[in-house]
Each structure stands twice: as C-alpha cells, then as structure tokens.
Length: 115
Length: 115
Image 1: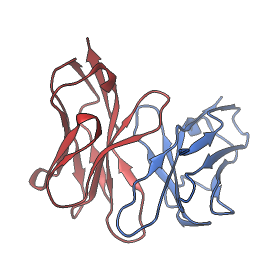
Image 2: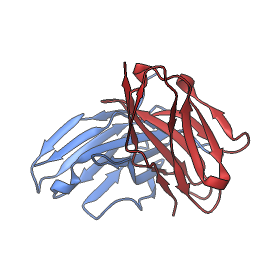
Image 3: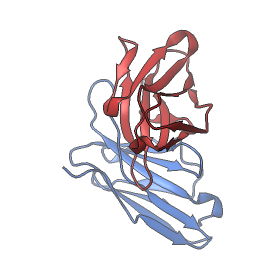
Image 4: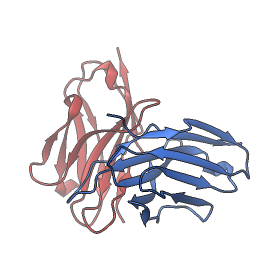
C-alpha cells in the first residue's frame, strides 16, 4: 500500500521569503502526486499535480513542485511567500492503475507567514 | 458553477446516536468520494462511488458506517451508534470519470462532534 510522509508539522516563514515543503512517498512504482491547500473553513484546493513527463510542475498561486524519483520526493516550493499563503498544505498520492481512485494524504504541514 | 456542497456544516450529537451527513456533488460528476479528517491528520479515504454503486468501500472503519447514493448524484453517509472517536471532519469530493486521472473537487466538509 502507498503512504505519504510530510516530515514538517509546522513551518514559519517571513513574508517575501522562499518556501519549501517536503513530501516523501512510498509506492512500488511512480504514483500520481498532488499538493493540496486547505484554509480554515475551506475545502481542499488542488495546487498542482504530477503524472509523468517533466519533473518540474507549475501550479496555481505561484507554486511549483519537483518530482525526484531517486529520493521518492515531491517537494513544494514558492520563491516568495505572501501572507495569504498561510494555510495547511497536504501532499497526496494516487494509484495510477485498476479501479482504485482514492487519494492517500500525508498528515499535512501548517504554514505560518510572519509580516 | 456550483461546487461540492455538504450539509450540515456542523453536527453535534451524543454518543450512541445515529447521524446522516449529506453531500451534493458537482453536476455531471459520476464519481463521488468520502474522506474523514481527524484533528491534526490528513484526510483518510472511506468510500468511492461510481454512479449509484460503491466501487470501493475498503476505507469504512466498521459496520457502523454506511453510505448510499441511490440516484447517482446526492450521497448520504450514515453513522450508527456514534462513538466519541467518530468526531472528525467528513469531506466529500466528486470528479468526472474519464481515461486516466480525474481531479477530485472537495466540499467544505461536515464537522461532526460526538459528546
């Protein structure tokens, strides 16, 4: 079965600073990979996804993520954080075969942005 | 257009009671998913519907949990004899079903508190 690890429970950055949120997955092949953001009282919003091809993917709100097969990682980055980016971020994997359609999520990273 | 909606937004009940949580998916989405998000955790898969039938219910924790989708649109998650450990946010998502991966769109969730 697949699993996802987000080693950082909470990260604090200053507005304008760069950001990197870590995600490691465990799966026998290359899964589908996703990053979601969840703001208080809001549903999960998809930031970006990786299926295949170019290992650097661009998403909404200026986010990008890089898939590294050798490290089983899919880290999320943003060059300059805005105060509105404060939220909880979830990495997730999907199994690209069979009838299984569910996503497996990590436990999340809470991002605080200092003014 | 309208997104996924869930009602009620909050539900407080007493241990041992029965509850129903409702999900209205995006119009035209044939796939519907239920997830449960406990405090400080990422969402965990419960059940996936393809049309009216449950294609995968492997995430339901026990037989107190049951979900239906009689007309292939609205779904109801039913929990019998609620326990304090059932307290969580219950998330619903819907998607199209096309070849390959289909993005899941999440609702805002129902926060269930069992006293």
